[in-house]
Image 1 (cartoon, rainbow, N blue to C red):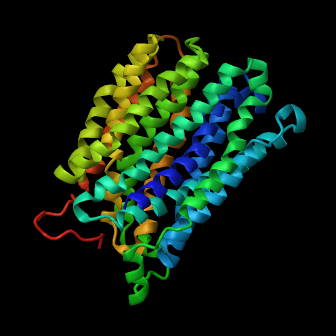
Image 2: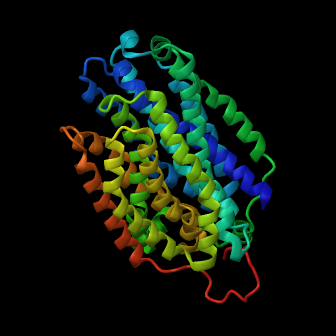
Length: 425
């Protein structure tokens, strides 16, 4: 389990590094470089528009790779998704700016961002199922939480590289070529991830399905026919997590640097410190999920998110580093209270033959609902003077909707803990 968890964590971290480095670049430099004819606010909105495309393609990736995972195994998904995301990310670092090739530049960004999202849409399902279907029943949330640490590691790695480049280079150098370096580094990280995953074994659950001939012939059709309500509920339930995380990690970065005049370095340090603590507490929250259940933690996380959004915006608007950090930290701790357990919760909600498709589609559809439009809507809602209370109101509404969806989902923690431990069935 340790080797499986490590491989899932590292691979997920690499894929999310690829995904997050684009979000950071969109907040910092992509607007003026690829949309120079727009106003500063419009350029940021356009950059966030290309950012959103990655979320729109993630459900398509979950369908494509979910089919592979349910028909041919979880292991192939982890290789194919990593190759696709890595190649697309490296290519982003090679795209000339608008000044060099005109409108072709943002078009290429859109295409490559689409491919990034396609690969990431498959990564989560493969990595989570590889750990969840190997894990003992009473520690499933703990072991399945390791892929959920990957986004924190990927975010810290992506922004750490950006922070180092910002500190080492002049603003002109950073805009000329410095922002491209993290995208180029993605190629080396992808090769390392593929080597680490090369020795992984297929899950016992899929081997059993394959041997018994019970694999789904058309997983998506089966999910759409028999589990559509569950997909919609899980997507709605998880939407708040995406909304909160990308508000902190992407929109707040742009708002702090452009509207509040806080330096890029200060904003990155505040956000990265909060994300680091969030990553460190992920296994702790998962252990609580193994002890008290998945649903109670998800409900608590949603309630905490709804209560914290207005204080978070107020703390952000002070432009004081310590207070901004506390605002971000409260939001991300509420977020991880939910997302630490969903890697066990979602697979347990779906039957084995369509688990890779159903869990991944629900998870990535939530990204469209909560992550794709949040930076764009938040930028629009914050356009006036004074604290952006409209952003807080929007996030509070999303949290309440997610709370209602979680309330309609069943608990999946085994009712009789005295039973012998078993793999996910």
